[in-house]
Amino acid sequence: MEFDNGILHISPFLSVTLGIVVLFVGKRVNNIVRFLKEFSIPEPVTGGLIFSLLVALLYLVTGIEIEFELSARDFLLVYFFTTIGINASLKDLMEGGKPLVILLVITIAYMVVQNLTGISVAAAFGLTAPVGLLGGSVSLIGGHGTAIAWAPRIAADYGIGNAMEVGIACATFGLILASIMGGPIAKLLINRYKLQAPVEEPLTVGFSDTEQGGRISHLDFLDAILAIHVCAILGFVLNEQLENLGLQLPLFVTCLFAGILITNLIPENFPRISGTKWPSRMPAISLLADISLGTFLAMSLMSMQLWTLVDLAGPIFTILGAQFFVALATILFVVFPVMGKNYDAAVVCAGFGGISLGSTPTAMANMSAVSQHYGASHMAFIIVPLVCAFFIDLANAILIPFFLANF
Image (cartoon, rainbow, N blue to C red; front, side, top):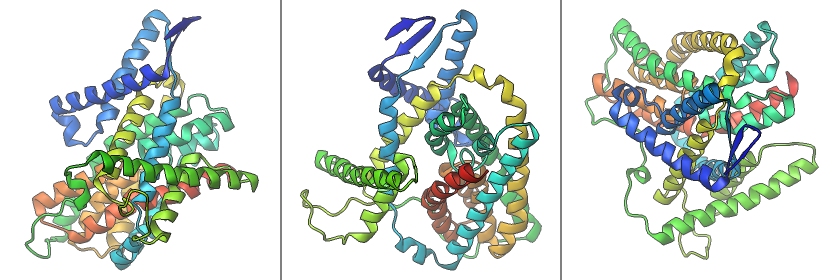
């Protein structure tokens, strides 16, 4: 830790340590403030925002600026997106059937519209297209993780110094809007069309067996790390080859692709040094995903320089307002009719409200609340997690570079 010219530099080791502390602070606050838990505000978001507000207050009162060394955060980012690739099964696309394909097509088309909306509103304020993308699929349908992942590149390549702050602000307020809109939309549709759950069955919460917990040995943990590292090595090689071809992608994107390739192309019984099967959707992989994402988000949010957002407050809230109405119109006039205008479609709409402006946990929380009140919808809990837990990240990895290069 060094102090130089009014700037307090925090070392990588201390930055990681503070990130863990911030994560636990968010957990404690969420447990105390019921509103935060009810609206599925992620714990690292809560803790990170509190810490960043304190840092901003320190800056306003004393003029001291705190800068964190975040090199360790970049490794956590690669870890997290690699676990997404490892957990991705292309067979699920077939199992979800026609409704999954329909919802996937709607979602991808919506992502294009969302980006065009953000770019258009940003242009009305005289801002560049990358700022509009930060208020589009980068931060909204992509969530905090995607916003934080792409912000450094957007900042470096397009000269937007506060790209991180803009992306995180949009992702945070989008999460709140997504939490608020999902349940009321489903209630409106169910009451208006007098819809009922098709059968009386136990509720589906949307989590796989591997997410239920269970004992994880030290060898399970090391096996999962080994799988992540193997994918990361292939991802690094792919990244270098693409650069040689003139295509530049963030390392986490090629690691995501590497995880998908290895998981879906190598047979399950392929011999491994650990003597175990490839750990796709195993508890240890889920644990590492939670650790890497939670700490990554906490470190990113606690390092925000909120005072740099003052000049963009008007454009940010205008973009979010426009995106809210676009999402609402898409749900009511596209998702619900195309998905069948039945009870399952109404529950899917609640989940899509979470996807469109928020995150996977928000989508699941919205659908769970509707199901607990009106009845189970197994179809919704099958297709919505598949779309928002994997395919959105894959589509975003293609759409974001396309929009950055062409707008």
